[in-house]
Length: 268
Ligand code: SAM
Image (cartoon, rainbow, N blue to C red):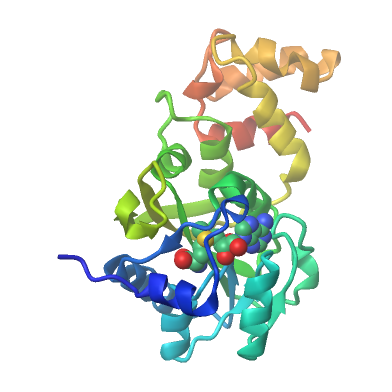
């Protein structure tokens, strides 16, 4: 039988109930929690940040081993709870935080059982984070985790896979079933570890480029990219595509993340 973190009792004592609007599915399986804490503890980071501590399923065991994180939390009741316990809380939407103003030192680590509704945005945004943020240990819906790690030619492969794989090396840390949370979500979850890769000078225009490439999956890549590549450069686009080993009939799903980066750079 799986052991569980005694969260229901804690909620009752505090007179709180999970809030759907904040994506509050609290983690209660201690084996999953231990794997997350071990993945965090295995990295020699200097600053530690957690998005959405909730009632501390991950925060408390980290504190127990002397690794108190700085927190980002949106729920006013939880902000108050953690401040009363003398933790530093950034009381903002994690999607609106100015990450470059956080003063993170290199190397830093971000851990989170992410609220489902912001998880893909957080990963795309973190691709553009300052390089000080070197590692992440993040919980996703399993289907999102599969998209993140999907290989070219598969139906899960797309914008999210290209962006994440180009900027990070990823590995699986743990799987979690719906009953590992309270309340139980409808879907399974997966925890992934991320390590930043050295990628220079891509930025937002690259995101726009890849997004356009996948806009109509059944269309040829060249057609999809017409809107984001100058007319004068379209011949060149085909030449570079061929140099990378693809034909004029290539679709976005055939290009590896590195192919996308090479194609983009050669078009600048
Ligand atoms: N870490 C806890 C756990 O594992 O049990 C809670 C995880 S719960 C899935 C998501 C947490 O993120 C909640 O604490 C919620 O209030 C917080 N949250 C939701 N939306 C947020 C946002 N946009 N920015 C920061 N925190 C958010």
